[in-house]
Length: 222
Image (cartoon, rainbow, N blue to C red; front, side):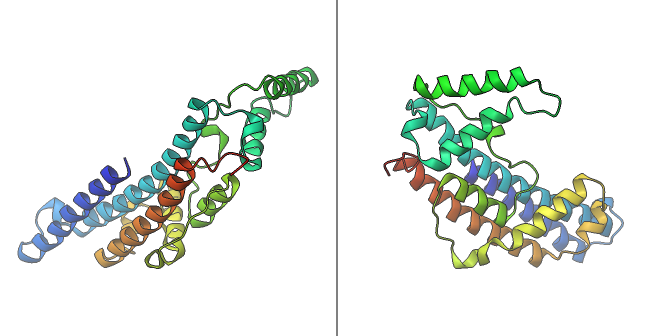
């Protein structure tokens, strides 16, 4: 999935660059060559990059969760970080300000029985807070919470560029800025730098996730 989405972004960038090249030799009487339209396309490029970030991290974590379940891993078998994630996930299923005491009591009994009966763990996307807020710091936090170790490529510059991508994505999603306003802040060189550093950062994180998955580093004995 990661490689497919990277190719989609590269294709989009290539088409956008061709439009700019075409604009230099054609009169600007075509709607698709007007500055505002090209700025909108640049804003969309940022949305595609953020989509790559979120889909990559979410996909990697969900594959780990699915592997845990398929291999029948129980609470006692996994490392402390996974235990804490699972416990919070189960408890949050009942948490609410107006929840009745019996609701908490029932969930507590369910959790206890789940552990004592050594039922295989089940986790889904709700077990980790990912949607809409992913930058390098948040990704580091997610990895730390799972016990995932990685080595960042120096070309990623620590993923610092991801904060700008996340902020612009959220501003566009909430209508704080328009697509034209967003796009005017970036040249094609800027967008290319964002793409390269983001892909480099994600590749490093994926390598750490793959090692975690392949070597079953989610187990308590590893």
